[in-house]
Image 1 (cartoon, chains in turn red, purple):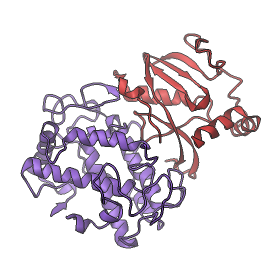
Image 2: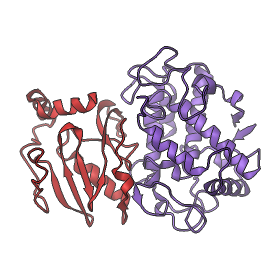
Image 3: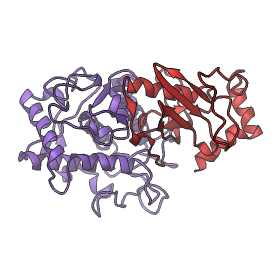
Image 4: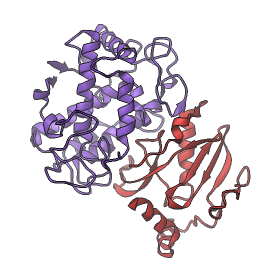
Length: 150
Length: 268
C-alpha cells in the first residue's frame, strides 16, 4: 500500500509533478495526449480523464488503458481485463546502464517483467503492447483479471 | 538419493522417462498431490498471503521455498513413475544445450506447442492459464536474452545473502540479484507461459529452477551453508530462518532445507 501511495504522490502532488517533469527531459506527459482510435469514455465518473488514457488498435486488437487514482490503472485487450499490481523493484538494464529502483507494474502475464510507467509518457501503452505481442493470435482469459497483492 | 544432472548429460531414454513421469503426475495423484497442485501453489504463494508474508518471490525465502517445492516434485515424480532414481535435471542456460528438443520439452518455441511432447495430443493440458488457450505457449527470445556466464559470475560474487528491506529493491543482495538478473530473466527469455504467474505449466520451469537451486548451492558452498537471512526474530512480512514456509508442512523452514545432502540429493 505504501508503494501505491507513493505513486499517487508522484502523480498528483505539485512536488511530484515537478519531479516527473524534470525527469522527462522536457517531454510533458500532461501536454501531449495521443489521438485515440475511439474517444476515451467519460463514463466512470470517478475522476476526470487522464490525457495519457488511450483507446486504439494495436496488431488487430483493441487496447484500452486508463490511469486511475489509487494505482488501480485499467488495461483491456479486446474487452478482457488484465489486473495490474505495482511493485517497487530494482531495474537492471541489459544494456549496461546502472541499476536503479523504481515502481514497476506486473500482471499475470508479465509476472517477472515489471514495466515502469511513472516516468514514461506512454508506459501503460508499452505494457499493453508487450502483452499483445505475447498473446499473438490469442486473447486474455478470465484468470488474467484476477488481482493479487505483492 | 537423487543425483541431479545437467540436461547436457541426459540420454534420450532418460529424457523420455522424465517427460512421461510429468505426464503421469498430470492425471494421477500421489502423496496427496498431482501436477496441478504445484501450479495452484505457485499462483497462491506468489502473492502476499493473508499472513502478510511473501513466501515464494521478491523475498529472502525465494531460494528455500523453491528448494522445498522442487524436492516435493522430485519425490512425487519418483513415486508416480516407480523409479527411485528419477531426478530433476538442470538447464544451464549459459551453455549451448537446449531443452527445447523433440525428445524432451518439445521443439516448438514460438507460439502454441501444438504437436510433440507437452502438446494436448501428447497428453498435456494447461491449467489456470491467463492466456485463453489449451496449448502451452512459448516466445523464446522475444522479450529477453539469456544471461551470460559473465552475468552469472557477477551475481554469484555478491557476498550478502539478503538484507532489509528484504524485497525486490535491495541492491546488495545475492538473493535479489539472482532473482532478478538470472531467475526473472530466464522466465522472460522463454516467454509465453514461462513469463506468467502460472509458469509451472511449462515443464522447463523445473529445469530452470533446478539450475537456480544449483547456483544457490554453489554459492552456499563458498559462503557457508548456514547463511540464510534474516536469522531470528519477527521480521515483518518475510520468513525468518526458523519460520515455516507455507504451504509446506510444519517445520519446513529455511533452516531445515539449507543442506541438500540432508534433503537427499546432490548436483553433479
